[in-house]
Amino acid sequence: MKRAGRKSAIPNPPALVLSVLLVSIATGLPAPAAGLGRLVLVKDGRPVSSLVLGDNASPVESHAARELQQYIQKISGAWVPIRKCRDRPVGSRILLGTPTSNSEIKTLKEQMRQLPTLGREGFILRRIGTDLVIAGQRSHGVLYGTYTFLEKYLGCRWFFPGEAGEVVPKHPTIALANVLEVGKPSLAYRGLGVFQTSGHQYDQDIIDWMARNKFNAKPTHHHVIGLNRGIGFEDPPASTETQYEAMTTRAIVPDTNVHSFWWLLPAKDYFDAHP
Image (cartoon, one colour):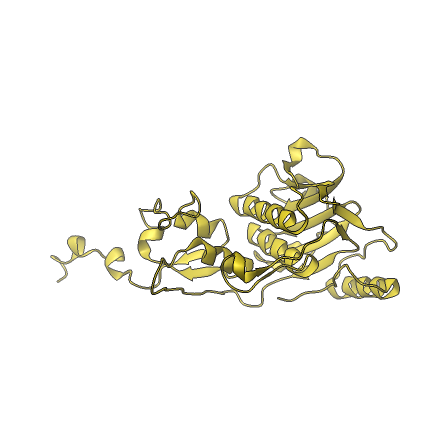
C-alpha cells in the first residue's frame, strides 16, 4: 500500500506536527490544525462516539462498519452503535462512505478533494475536528480504509484465517491524536486460490481473512456465481450468507477462470450441432 501519515501514538509533539505537515505537502491535502486534543472514541470500556453510514450505504460499506464495530468491541469491550446520517447523531462520529453514499462526507469537498485521483480502491483516513472520516471514492476504498485504520492505528493483525490467527490489542480507552492517511493498492489484481484437502474451499474464515488483508479476487467454481447463487457454506454454517454474498460484500470478485468451459458452452445445447 502507498501510505502517508503516522500512527497517532507519538510521544514527541513537535515530531507529530512536522510529520503532519510533511504528509500535507506530499499528498496535497491541507494539514489539520495543530494542538488538537485527542479524539476519544471509547472511554473506560464505554462508547462515546457512533459509526455513521450514509443513507445510501452499499453492502460493502455496511460490512466495513460492522467490521469496525466488531473489532472496537474486541479491543475495548465497547459496542459503538451504527447510525445513519438521517439519525443526526451527536458527539464524536466515525463517518464511513463515499461522497455519493454519505451526505456528511459529500460536504467535505476541500478535505476530500484527492479522492477522485485514488481510483475505486483508494481511501483517505482523516480526523476533522471531533470526527474521524474513513472515505473512498468507491465502496472498496471504504473497506480497505477501515482495515488500514484497524491495522495501523489500533494495532490489529490477521496472520491466518480464524480467531487464532488474529492479534487484537486490549485497551479500555481508544483515543486518537491527528489521523491523516492516504492509501491506494499498488496491484490491481490481488487474488488467492485456496483448495483444501479437507473441509470446503469457500470457508468463511478464509474469505474474511482475505478481505482483511485486502485481497480482491478468488478463483471460484462456476456454480457460485451462476444461477445457483443460493449455495451456502458447508456444515456447520458460519452465517446465513451465501458464498456469493460473502465474497461480494467483502469486495472480493468470484473469478471463475477454471473448470468453466462446459458451463459456458453446455454440451446439451451445442454438441449435436458442433460435435
